[in-house]
Image 1 (tube, one colour):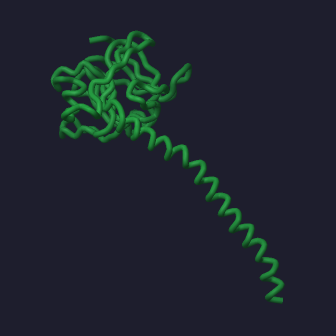
Image 2 (image 1 turned 135 degrees about the vertical axis):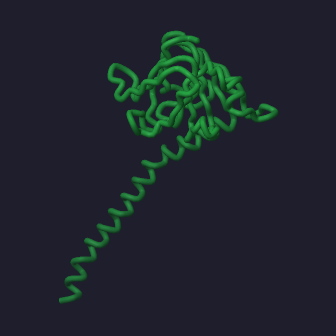
Image 3 (image 1 turned 180 degrees about the horizontal axis):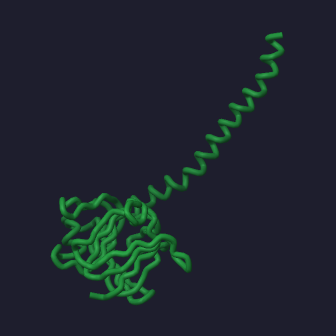
Length: 193
């Protein structure tokens, strides 16, 4: 009798193991694009631009690299993006976080410095070789106020407004009305200063 019960249970065990194996393989394939995306981001950064400047003009923009990895001496963020911490002409977006200006904690990794008046949809490969859509972790406002959108298009999802001035900075952490980390898609600056 015991052998009969085990014989009946064995196909169920095999199906269960086969199901787990198939699930593991499927999850492996699903996670591969995420790993490939992370690898391409770091390799694009490693081969290209560390700090990208974007100048807005309505919905159009131009970009240029402020410093690349083949620069002789690595520059601090403040000299790369602002030149002077007391008068910041840019909105800075940081790929990595956290940022704490008061404690002089500036994240490493790619930085985008945005100036001008207008908006930009970050869901495109920028001049630094990276797609910044859903990648920014922190921000530091310059002399322009504006807002961040979670999605591009007619339905922007959550929005986060910011005021001008170098005392306005933060991390995308989803707290107190802020956008969550890695959810920023559109940046709007209200004025060119």
